[in-house]
Structures are given as structure tokens and as C-alpha cells.
Amino acid sequence: MLSDKELIRTTDRLIKEQPEIFDALLEAEKTGRVPKFTHKKRIDITIDSEILRKFREVCRKQGYKISNRIERLIIQDIK
Image (cartoon, rainbow, N blue to C red; front, side, top):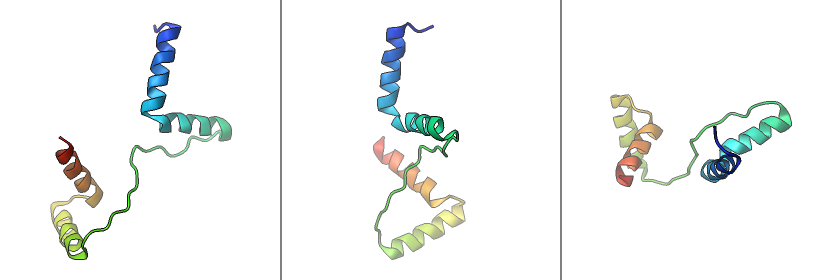
């Protein structure tokens, strides 16, 4: 079991790392309903329409969702 100091330190760290979880808990406390929770974020990007057309076709043929494929490509670049 965590000591009080360890619990406070851990909670503070988690609030900084994943504030959306605690926002959802606060919302649930206020409304009595748990909001839909996701780690995903929407982004707006602009790319060449021909590239997008070809990418959609590749994703369709390979059975990928476009967003999942882009996410994997980003992860590759991050590593």
C-alpha cells in the first residue's frame, strides 16, 4: 500500500501525464455520466489531392484504416 506522500506524488504525476482521465472523472462526478473517453486526437492536415487519392487506394487494398496507417507511419518516424 502506498504511503500518503507516495499516493499524492503518484497522483500529481498522473494528472500531469494524462489530464484527460481526471477531466473525465470530474465530468462524471458533476453529471453522473461517464463521458466517452479516447486517447485519440483529431488533427487537420492539408496534402496533395492526388497523393491522398493514391494513399486511400493503397489503404483500401491492404485493408488499413487511413488514420491507423498514418499513425503507424508517424510512430516509425518517431523511433
